Image (cartoon, rainbow, N blue to C red; front, side):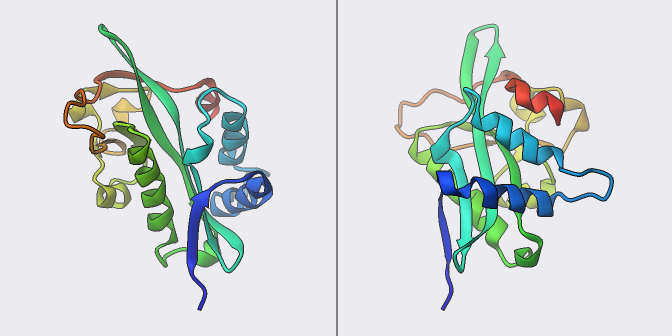
Length: 181
């Protein structure tokens, strides 16, 4: 019986992750989807958190990927850490069988274990709602994508302690690699 294995990305996974991203986001008008370059640049940035780059492996093959990287929420009270989810990808031949849901949940669980409080994402409300995401603008969060309405979403993760501060509100500032997407 083949099972799905969820784990942080390792050094040997760079090529397989690139293939998953390239096939999942393939478009006839571009040689390499921008998501491939985004992940490569994020790996070399201060936003990279290796324990939150999650792969789904099925039958020894990397078939899914979910990435959480560091962003900052700026307000008149200063700056607070948060995470952004993306890209999320599943190899086309393994889509629609739950691998995407599993790898995203594994990444969110890992973030919760690290004591993270807030995750933002730009994506399908119908898909991300299953994890508890809702409109980010209604949580007091803005970004370059705020004007898109429902696709700009946020999730408050459970606090690690009962005395945890409320999640931050303000402008979400993304690391420079995101400007190219």
